[in-house]
Length: 293
Image (cartoon, rainbow, N blue to C red):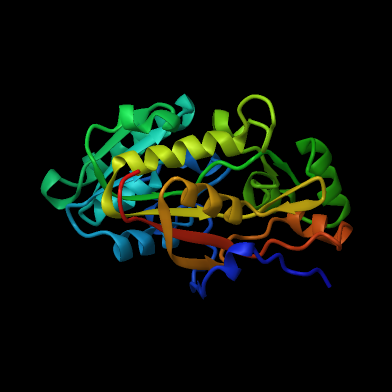
């Protein structure tokens, strides 16, 4: 039986398990989100986003997602009377975010929602992009490239047919995340490097920028999960904790949930590699800014 991977962050404080279920697509927000957004490789769990917004902000607050992707955080925030800045480095995803914002603005008058400001830019320069302090940051950072096997779509289709599966259940559907090539220039960097910029050094810059734009006493909430590279699990939640504490943040609360879904290819990967611990949880690091640095 495959063992479950447990992040080292669980040794730092008590962890609360959230009853968050796997939500395919955008759930009850699908009417606002453009249909094309379903193709995004790293979608936020909408129930989790909703919970975090309601738990850690109040109406009228300004929220920030520095790795906005589809822009779902801003949509949910605005529907609950919060305001949101969203930063995205990839123009394609930025265009999807803008469509979502336009859909929301057509659906509800100003008095019944908050505002959304989408920004095309690099979160390593957040303090230059965000014109005012924010009350709360809620985001999920890009990960390093992770490959779980899948390969060419046509070959995958044939393998599924041979295994008596319907390809429509997997290709473009539940197996959409079989190949997690996480977006953005940071996600394409080597995870660590003694020469030149790495994922870790770039994310330290980003978390330093979090500290600049977040109000004192505010929360920077990072949703992050481990990933697999070279048949080993990379403890990204613990690396994230270490980077954020080095930038002046304190771990105020630690949560995790198992609503991350399991694609056909992920199941197959663990069957073929039973010695690799299975990633069953996504972690939520609630980091507090007690003072500036």
